[in-house]
Length: 124
Image (cartoon, rainbow, N blue to C red; front, side, top):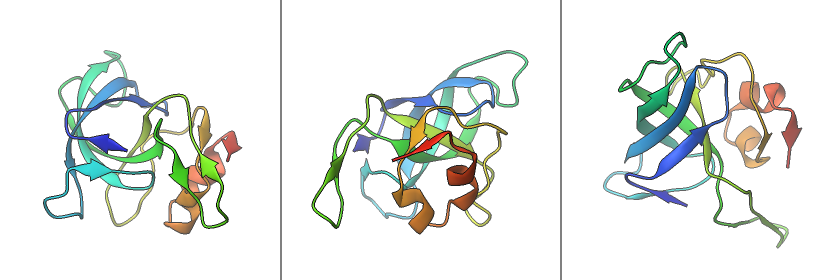
């Protein structure tokens, strides 16, 4: 569960290191975001030669959260950090990077982010 102004890690190789959440897309006036939600972020820290620059406005999908998520079978999934993957736009749902680092949640495949799940090293 992330809220506005949360600082999150980036789990891809676009060059960004940390982002700040400024809006939850598609939820009206809601202020909380969960795994699989698309958020609008501002890049706080980035590599100078990367694809994404510092202070750039980007769309990202949440792939890991520290807050546990209950699954339909009754189990819970929880990760060590809050992480996102930067995407091109809402319609294609394709990542801007070419590699995904760390594990991602299985719920992303059900939400249509098939490319992110196939590029990830581990899916939980």
